[in-house]
Length: 174
Length: 178
Ligand code: SF4
Image (cartoon, rainbow over all chains, first blue to last red; front, side, top):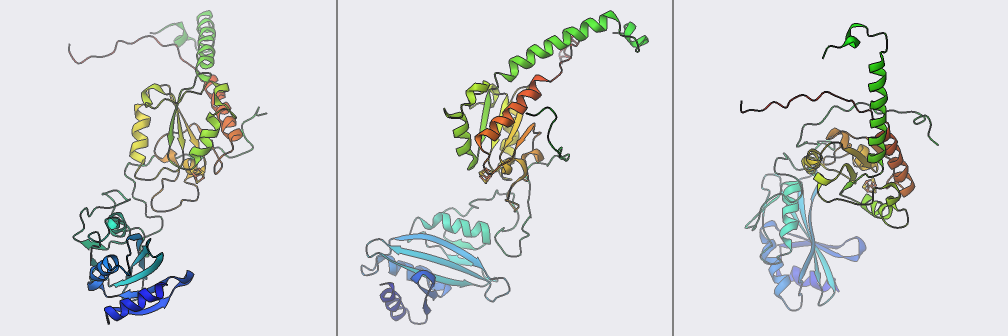
């Protein structure tokens, strides 16, 4: 079903939508040029044969060491025709800015804030470009592969903790 | 107040015996009263909350221990139940709730997340709430069974019962205007 969509997309945006393939789980995927993402998304939403009226999940991936390093993944769903596709946009580390798709789907708002928070990928024309989960004092982007796993940044000074009693338990326990 | 006690510390005088007896009686009475009416403040942040609900509702019935009334104002509570994962963003809130409670107060870490961070050894989670506030009882388990929670509660009751209270001479509170 979605194969038709991908083929129509490739035919409509030659060169900008490239390398279509069938992903795990049977979803059809394609790569999209970074500068064309809003245009492609708007076409997918407004064209009656496509009617992708939902963006259930937008996220990012960090391929540390690869070039370009980041990728933003758009999972799209059409409730009218019941088909899904996945668009992948490669984002080089030197230019971590995309056009926001909140103008197409308002629901993309928090997903893009999530990408900003966790990966540091920012979105032009985003209505509310703040961090989603982490606090404002937090430095760095925790889901980047080069962020230390235990890089905690406590907001309040931590107490000294005495090692607690280890043993068979208090005497007189029943 | 310098009394004969300071001069001859080795010998228990009748006065010391009398105050000691009185002190113990007061401690016992206060402990008994406090342990059987623990007013709890549930600081519920994560999945352990499910188990907390089961503890506090009819089947396991925390009311048997006099702790059935959750107060949603820390000012009215004396047992802080930290139920669930506390992350770095929440740590200041937890600290503030703790500081708003009036003395005497006790803290129970409910579940491994509150006790030690559990398996969330990552960038966001406080590795045990004792890094933020002092804790009296740790209840292990992910989530702990209600029996475990009640066991922890009974341990806390024992602790409350055995607390010593000191009779002190009242010192006038210093004031600014003089
Ligand atoms: S200890 Fe287990 S059940 Fe409790 S909050 Fe942590 S993960 Fe959830």
